[in-house]
Length: 152
Image (cartoon, rainbow, N blue to C red; front, side):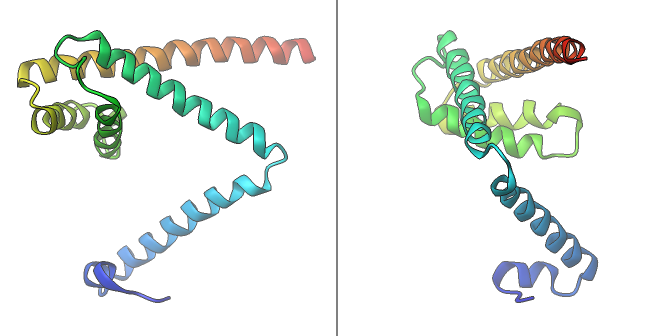
């Protein structure tokens, strides 16, 4: 295995960390390449793109709903996606805490939204996302069970 640059400096002497990074990268790569082994690649890709597009639309709609953020554009939604992803990667349940610290800071530093408005927006934004996931998941569970019963 070829070790270069920044990775070399961080994990050169730590064999456990090196093994973890290599294993994680291999799993990520295997997961991405598994798309090519699917029977219905096109359907999978369509649904994946549709999910992200609808997630983007939901986020953009929430930004437009607030007077303090309605002037923000597509870039702001993409920025919030990136910041929110970093916050969700923290080892906390559902990003609770880290999301509510990092996203308001992004709104304050990147878009000059006042701190209280940024915090209020983030709580409503995250709450809305969570509610949509819970309701959508419950509906999916019911629909899937009905479909499976009909097949029997």
